[in-house]
Image 1 (cartoon, rainbow, N blue to C red):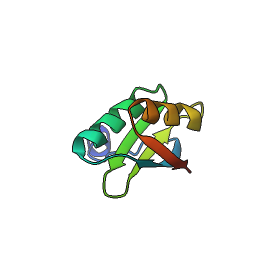
Image 2 (tube, rainbow, N blue to C red; image 1 turned 90 degrees about the vertical axis):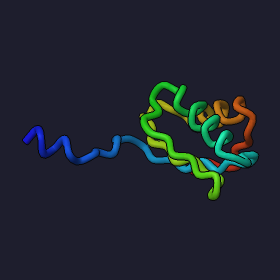
Image 3 (cartoon, rainbow, N blue to C red; image 1 turned 120 degrees about the vertical axis):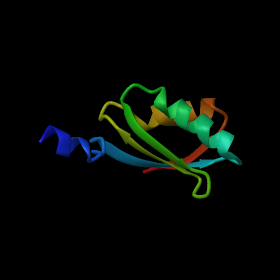
Image 4 (cartoon, helix red, strand yellow; image 1 turned 180 degrees about the vertical axis):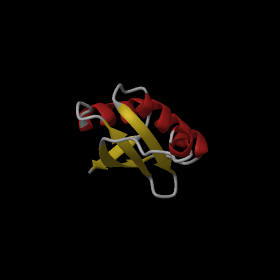
Length: 83
């Protein structure tokens, strides 16, 4: 069973959030935003889309919207909404 179960990737569990972000213009911006969010303890997964202007995150319940907003804004980008 261990071998078979290791073949399947399991999505991290937690709260899923979408963060709308303005100011990203290139893949370097995407990397910068992703790294900023990954620095927050309790952030389990981050995917950032330049085309959509969004970050999708999976977080622990102790991570607040304000923590994520602050991290993105300190990286030099603007958060327009989190839902």
